[in-house]
Amino acid sequence: MGAVASTTQSYFYGRKHFTQTGYIKHLANYKSPVQNLSTTRVGQQGADGIDLAEKVVVVTGANSGIGKEIATYAAAKGAKLYMFCRSKDRAEKAKQEIVEATSSDTVEIVLIDLSEMASVRNAVKELQGKEKKVDALVCNGGVLLNEKQTSKEGNEVTFASHLLGGSYLLSQLLLPQFHVAEDPRIIFVSSGGMYTTPFPDWPTATSAEGATHEYNGNLAYAYAKRGQVLLAEEYTNLYPKIKTVSCHPGWTLTPAVVLAYGENRKYLEPMRTTWQGAEGIGWLMGTKGSDLVGGAFYLDRKPQRKHLGPLTSYTKNTEKDVEDLMANLKKAADCESL
Image (cartoon, rainbow, N blue to C red):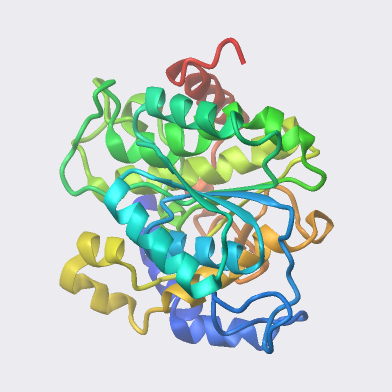
């Protein structure tokens, strides 16, 4: 009953807020400038006033879709940009396009497979050999698979890429760099899918032995996205100097959405452009930390509720649930020494 009600409520709420129509409605309430393109540079006509010069920005999944738009925005604003990507060829192509569009000469690629903990560690080691600080980390990368796949290390790939490796381990390893930065922030790019579920028991979340149901790609994705929301809340308590938030880009037309939903994406129309999905995330990355509410779940520059409808208790986790989540993440990522 709770699952059906939360899914239905999420869809109708999304029809109002997550579409392109919702973005345009929210845009009318912005109190600071907004630009129409990710490529608009500092000082150009139509710029939003954000300046990322001297900032070090890391964006995962930066070679396509929302990640590429966020990366383009960071480069246009003068950041030292690190594109964390799995495919060398796609990353090189995206980098060339970003450089040509923004005239930036401070864009680098770091190859990483977010579902492999060893790869995450190697990528961070490479970055730490070049940078003493990281001002902003945007955890955007990950996959949504219809069939269960496991990494070489035995982790279910959707869960590992979005939450275990792509959010938790990556951010944990970069803590020394965040603490050097003057106004650091971590941004977990979650999804409206998190509205449909609480974070379940660990075997179910990781599709391991003892899970309460057979693998479902959409549920695996939703579990990871709810986990990111909870992680942002916990980080706000653990690391108050680092402004950590989660966010939702709305229903945005990206290659990943086309692959995951196929013809069913028609139920999400009118969908946002990639820039409309990324614009609010760019603002989270560039605005002053004092403008942000730590642990909040953002859509279009504004904190949103994290549970919907009359059955909100269904999607809520207990304090014990969250304690178990953090302990299990630490153990699974082998972060006992951190």
